[in-house]
Amino acid sequence: MITEELRKYVRNSLSEGIHPGEIERTLRTTGWAKEDVCSVLENCVVKKKSAILDRGYYKSRIGIFTLVALVLVLAGVTLYLWTDRLDLANKNDQRVREFYTKLSGSQVAFTDAGELVFPDERKFRDQKNAYIENRASFLEADLRTMRLTLYEKGIASTSVAILTKGKGRSWWETPTGDYRVLGKSVNAYSSIGNVWMPYSIQFYGNYLIHGWPHSDDGTPVPQGYSGGCIRLSTEDAQGVYNFAKVGMPVLVLEDLEKLDFGMLEPKSTHSDLPLVSAASFLLTDLSSGETIVEKMNDKKLPIASLTKLMTAVVAHEVIYLGKTIKVTKGMLASVAQVFRPVAGDGYIGLDLLYPLLMQSSNDVANVLSGFVGDETFVRNMNAKAFSLQMNDTQFADPSGISPQNISTAKDLGKLLQYIYYKRPFLFDISRGVAFENVGLIKIGETVPIADLKNFNEFVGQPDLIGIKNGSTIAAKQTMASVWNIHTEKGDVPVAIIVLGSNDRKKDTEALLQWVKKNFAVL
Image (cartoon, rainbow, N blue to C red; front, side, top):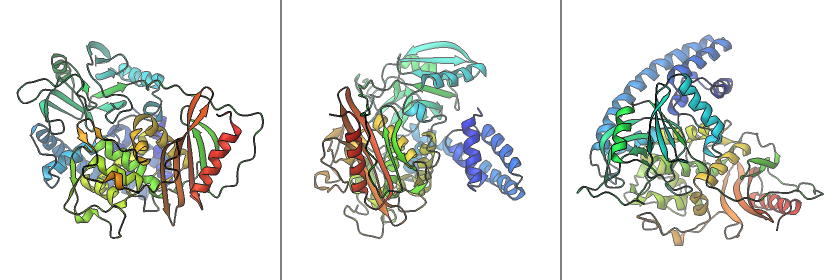
């Protein structure tokens, strides 16, 4: 469906000189329909009246058709791998890499900050109504009512019970949004959970709709056993499986976990803002999304290692981090770092998140991205940014070294809001909170977490929720932090973002104290 959001993205991208072929690849990666993308692109290119651009665009279309054909071939291979009992710990196996590359290539088809951060029931209803008006067949998984409904040519035909979903704000929370059926398997074997999943339908990354899983001997898994998939009874899953077709829309809706927030009430008088060196800063209330105060929060600037916040999100969502990742020499940087993975050794992916966020390890960023391929990983970073409406953000590498890792304080506020509501454990890791285990996965076996020194400032302060710093010549000093501000009516999570700073710690401290001084806080 062509929306104003799609038109705006294409117009902005063309105005910035991005090649139409690259625009199409990005949008197709994020799940926009090819015919809609091409229609908007052709219209915008004609308006620009650029013959050179037109020729480049149509040449790129040839490449796209070739790419689509290749993807179709890989999709067939992936379905075979899905049902084959692979050892996913063997990262040098080409088939295993193809398996994960396919998972990492699956993206949200229609999401924005409204769905992902504050699920907007009205917009969900609008999208659903559009499918109904177009007489489309689709699946609707309502995780609030725990019902999955089949719509055939726009008419609700069957509704079945959802038996299990991922726990909210957990490591395995079921993602909300508008997806597509990516693949099907009558009886898929999960090398992740070592169980069989009858009538499986893949709709995003590692997430599926399926019947009740069972072990080799037919023993069903326990009730609480869940990795975030949408689980049905096997009988109901069979009916859904028979109805679903590859490419069919899958709407997933969930309310936020009910959290009791306070309110920032201004005092009768306000003191002037403190003098800060940052070129841009933003203070925002994450509970409401409202800006408290800002300076040039829409200015595009290099963000240095704040990039790694998105690296952590994407790694968690597109790679199964419970298995070990084998390090190759090509993944490692040439400069020495405090934590340095050893080529040839294997590291549990969840363990690697600690040096990534605590010590800003460039090596770890490269290991995570190199597993599925740097180009594929960065493409997923940009696709995730697009899905969060971080419209002024562009990632060039997973570490933040490149000055082409560009964002705004406003966009980074959206990312912090997403992490706060959907992936809060990443903030815990940034503070050095040592989890003993995640489900059956033991944390700290491959990385000495207790021995890692945390390079983030303010660690240990009781009101700190999450933090990440960065520094390069181009970006100067950067910092993104989230704090609990205590009020009489409850706590309020406040994000403080500073970019282009000469002293990120001093600037952040000054802005934090300004909030506490000018609002009714305890």
